[in-house]
Image 1 (cartoon, rainbow, N blue to C red):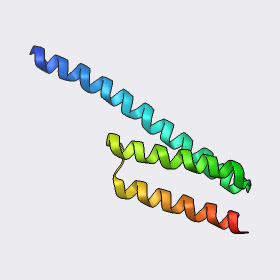
Image 2: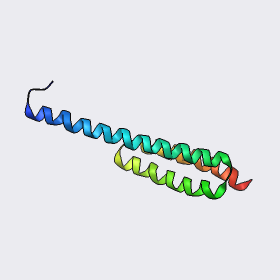
Image 3: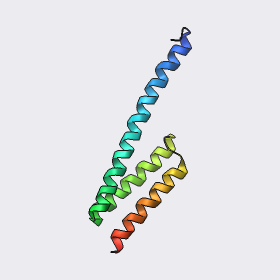
Length: 89
C-alpha cells in the first residue's frame, strides 16, 4: 500500500479508470456479438442497424484508447464483408 498522498490518489484514480475501461470493453464486445448474430440470422434490415451501431462503437473505442485503430478497422472490415455476403444473396 502506498504511503504518500499522491500515490494513494493514483491508486484510486487508476482503479476507477480500470473499471470504466472494463465496462466499455464489455459493452463493445456485447454489441459486436449481437451484430454478428443478427448477420448470421440473415435478416438484412436488423443486421444493417446493428452494423451501424457496431461501427460507431468501434470508432468510439478507438477515440477512448480502448483498442488500436487497426484492430477497429479490421473488425469493421470483417463485419462489412459478412454483411455484404447476406445482403447480396
